[in-house]
Image (tube, rainbow, N blue to C red; front, side, top):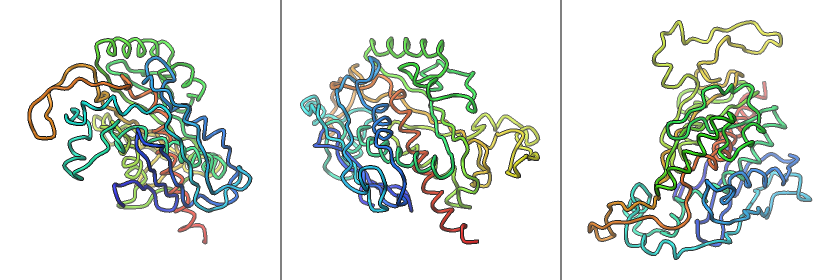
Length: 366
């Protein structure tokens, strides 16, 4: 697909728009008909993603009010036809990027986009901007409602680490949305959250930025999602979350720490269950074995790099290849993680909704 703007097979989305253009949005295809859709739930997810929600996020002021243009009956029931959603940009400031029009921002997409296409929307990064994720979050909110109504599935993410400060006492089986939303950094350990906020503030005052890790759990996933070989569920989850801006790493279950264990320590033993479903004594597999969900909670972690735009002067080159320096301007998050939490949840939901429809299509007849 042109510019890689579409994602999914049966539950398929296509996003559109640039950071400082007229608006951004998404077209959702394949959503089953007669799904009772709560528009306020879509807006609530966008509110968790929007800029300007706290002093540790970008000060850009956008209401991010969603408009649903098609696909619903009486504004609440899906028709099975494409659902088009748009959010208008209100607080564009392309003038903030006039210096960046002639100098490539270090670790941004400017240079590679220019090399590939010979043209780019330099204001705010265009399609490389995190503002593109509005469409993903809106579509993911629909996927969440589909998964909840069809299978009772819940998806929840939180900030696990900021820079060198890590929350190590979080139980993915027990954490609740209210715990995550109780503070501006979205870490469900209050004492650790305070230290995280202080670290972001301190680094921001230096004109610098920081990254970290988001953890996500899927509770009550359907059994049998995922395909053998190329379409393994964890492979599709990895592609989904790694397509988000600023992502640099993916783990599932025991992740890289699992390499320190022996097979006898790492294997998840099967045990009897009261309802006849698959049940394991441990969950080092992260809820997926052989590329297929086994019904245990799916637990993943996503690493985000420090925000590339910083106020410190950096070495770079201009569009003619000549050496120059550049200090970032505009409005940017000193740390992307608090606003990236709903983005991770959205991408996980999109993958699971797609695989749920694929599972029904292939395996429900017999």
